[in-house]
Image 1 (tube, one colour):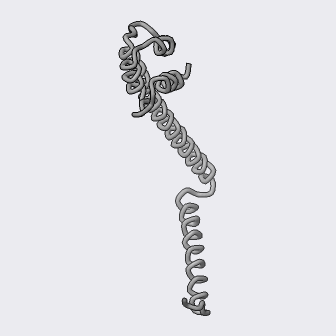
Image 2 (tube, helix red, strand yellow):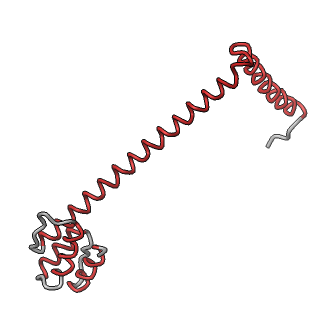
Image 3 (cartoon, helix red, strand yellow):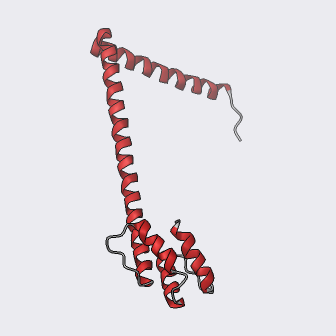
Length: 144
C-alpha cells in the first residue's frame, strides 16, 4: 500500500486545476462562437431538444409495455381456450371472462382425464396431485 506523498498530492491538484482550465476554455469558446446575446437562446434550444428526447423515450417505453402486455393477453386467452376445449366447452363468440366462468362451472362435473388436460393447458398441473386439488388450482388460476 503506497503512502500518499506531497508529490502525488500535487499531481492530483494539477489534474483538478487542468480540468478547471479545460472547462474555462470551453466556456470562453462558446462565448466567442455564439456571443453573450445568443446564450439564452442556445440554452432554450438545448432544453427543448432534451425535452423532446425524453418524450420520445417515454413513448417508446410505453409502446414496448403495451406490446408485452398484449402478448401476455393473447397467451392467456390461448391457454384459457385450450382448457375449455379440453373440457369440451365451446369458445366461439365468447369473451375470455365468459369462457373462464364456463370452465369454473364445468370443472366439477368433468371426468378426471379432462381435468388433468385442462390443468396442463392452464399450466397448473403438477404430477402427483389428486383431481380435487387440480380442480381447485384450475379455479384459482382463472381469477373469477
